[in-house]
Picture (tube, rainbow over the protein chains, first blue to last red):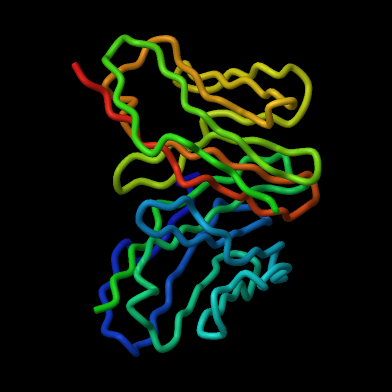
Length: 115
Length: 114
C-alpha cells in the first residue's frame, strides 16, 4: 500500500491550454474525491466517485472542469482552456466503503500554475 | 449554511509549551469532525476524528480534541509542542450520509519557536 498517488506533482501551463491530472487511489478504496486548495484556504470539494460512478459533480467550478474514473480505479481531472484563476493545488483523496466514518487519505497533490 | 471557522490564521508557540487551536462549525445535521495536518509540499494527514461518544478524542502525535456541542466547537490541543509540529492545521466537518464531502476551515499555521 503506497498511499494515494497523484501525477504530475507540478504543472506549469500557458493560459488557454488543457491539462489533465491523474490520481491513483489506495487499492480497493471505492470512494475517490477531488479537492482544490488555493493559497491561504482550506481544501474545497470539487467532485466525488463511488467506484466508477460520479455521484456528485455540482461543485465543479465550471464546465471547463471534468473528471472521470472509467474503471473504478484511477481517476483523471481535466481542465480545459485554463485560466490564471485555475492556479491552485489539486488534491485527490480516497476512502473505503461502507459508511462515512472511514478516513479519507489524501495524496500530495498536483500544483498547477497557469501563466 | 455549513461552514468551519478557524479564527486564528497564525499562531506561534514556544517549544514545550501547550497548544490550543480553535475550530467552530456550523452544520445542520449531526457533524463528523476532523483535524488534519499539512506540512509544506505534503498532502493532508488525519490527526483525529470525532463521530460520537466520548467528547474527548485522542489522536496521533499526542494531539487531542474536545467536542463541545453547546459551543459548536472542536478545539485541538497538545500539552507540549515539539518543533516538528510546525505545520498548517485544518479543521473539517462532514456528515453521516454516504458520500458527504468534507468542508474545511481556512487553516491555522503553527510556528514553533525555540
